[in-house]
Length: 343
Ligand code: NAD
Ligand code: UDP
Ligand code: UDP
Figure 1 (spheres, rainbow, N blue to C red):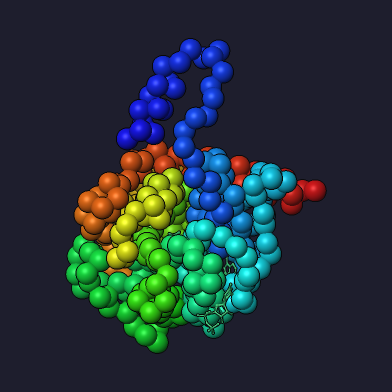
Figure 2: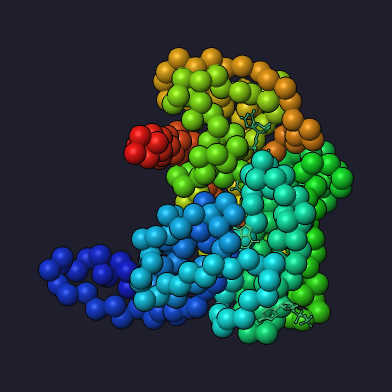
């Protein structure tokens, strides 16, 4: 209330007037595990711009220094090359726990490591939170719902996961991460927040990420065949990364301790999505149906009533707007990689 009023007041001040920052500001020491990754680096930008002290712990499995290099040397920023499967002793007020590969080809590359990261890594984060009294937000996923029998998925749905399939290392890893969070909350009084994140896209996605957005955009930009796995009738709902970052911060600052879906409820078939991207990028790619992948969830759409009600949050960025920014990013990435190939 007060803060909004002060900000309104500040807007009305003449530009040349020296603005004194008289807003009450609660600077926090915040750890972001996986902060050099796609989502993590956007979150770090937002937290740094808000004036917090941010520490990133990342083992650079899928993350890159380039995503956060603009903060290196800033007095409020620290980067630790650290694998979260090992214990970490630092002093912080809040932890955003994002360390884990997220794209299917990445998390299937070393399933045992994926399980260790989501179980042992989460135990370390919760142990750290317990010792220093920090609040933890766990980045969970819509994959806890598996190939869902309930549609759209609300947080009360328990899910439909194959425990021994190719996606299990990730899905079950995240399910245990949630179980651990609530066990530490109940038994050790750790303050936890659980975000169930649905498909997210935007700049800084990895070129070889293997997820549908990066694959389709790169294929369209290179005039290669756009590969739709299976019949293309399976659906997903895509949110732009800035919407997710808003949601993560709102959840961390809220009193909501139950899991919260963060995703865009607008659902599309993968076939339609291929057409949207092809039309946006232009070019001469053909869209082709290729072999289906095992255990591919057939439908996915978040019920976001909980986030709306308790966080006053909903996604704002329309797909076309977000995709345009993402296409620009991939164009530059392609130029960059061609340039480095030549030299
Ligand atoms: P990403 O692969 O870009 O980022 C993950 C980061 O974690 C990388 O920087 C990686 O190097 C780091 N990491 C992996 N294992 C680690 C370990 N053992 N120790 C330290 N760091 C480690 O993926 P992302 O899309 O930014 O995803 C971030 C988080 O959000 C993940 O936990 C993911 O499961 C979750 N999530 C993402 C999506 C999405 O659509 N992007 C959807 C659901 C959930
Ligand atoms: N831990 C950590 N940093 C800390 C405190 C704990 O990484 O600041 C790790 C530690 O390795 C431990 C795990 O978190 O194994 C779980 O901590 P907890 O206190 O729950 O368990 P305990 O130490 O009793 O095994
Ligand atoms: N997909 C596709 N072609 C690709 C990559 C993915 O048709 O080149 C499909 C995939 O089978 C799934 C959807 O797109 O149905 C989303 O896949 P992604 O790997 O991006 O994320 P998921 O939601 O499955 O974790």
